[in-house]
Amino acid sequence: MSKQGPWLDYDKVQEQIGGGGAFLMGQVPGGKLNPMTIGWGFGGTCWGRAVFLVLVRPSRYTHGLIEQSGEFAVSVPSGGMEKELSVCGTKSGRDADKIAELGLGTVPGTEVGVSTLDVPGVHYECRVVAKSRLTEMGLLSAEIADRHYPQGDLHTLYFGEVLAVHRR
Ligand SMILES: Cc1cc2nc3c(=O)[nH]c(=O)nc-3n(C[C@H](O)[C@H](O)[C@H](O)COP(=O)(O)O)c2cc1C
Image (cartoon, rainbow, N blue to C red; front, side):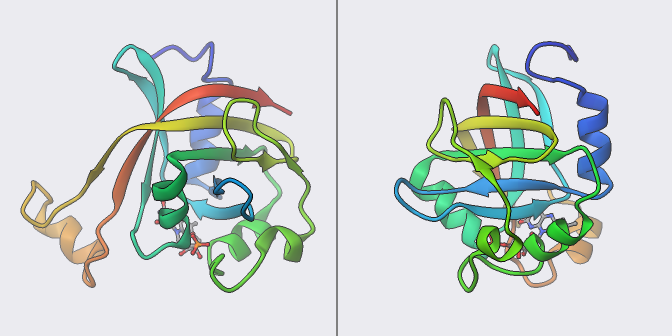
C-alpha cells in the first residue's frame, strides 16, 4: 500500500491508533458532533479507491450516527491527548456533549457533513461505501469470540471511502 497520497504519515497514524487511540467522529446534518475513541482502524486500497475501515459496536451512540448519515471522519492526533481519548472512550454522546465538555475546537468537513477536531494530526473525511456485521455464524474464531464478544454486541465494519485528508 502506498504511504503517499491520502495515507499521510501512515506509520505514525497506525502507531497512534494502536497505542493511544484516535477519534472517530460522527454527526448527522444539523446535529451535534460526537467523538468516540477507537483503538482499531485501517487504511488501504480497495475497489480502486482509498478506504478507511473502522469497527463499531452497535451499542455505541456513534453507530446510530453513522447509520443515519452514511459518513464519518477520523481525527488521528499527533499525541498528547490522553485525557480527551479517555473521556471519549468512556462517556457516551447519548448522555454528554463531549466536545463542549472538553472545550475542543472543530473544523467543518470539506467533503462530508462531519467535522474533524482542530488538533495537530491527520484527519480523514469518509463516506461509507460498504458495511458488514461480524456474525456468530461467520468465521469468527472461538478464541476471539470468547475474549472480545462474551456479551455479543459484535462490531459492524464500516468501509469509508476517503474523500479528503488534512494534516494540521
Ligand atoms: C482505547 C479505546 C479504544 C476503543 N476502541 C473502540 C473501537 O474500535 N470500537 C468500538 O466500538 N468501541 C471502542 N471503544 C469504546 C468506545 O470508545 C466507548 O464505548 C465510547 O464511550 C462510545 O461513545 P459513544 O456512545 O458516544 O459512541 C474504545 C475505547 C477505548 C478507551
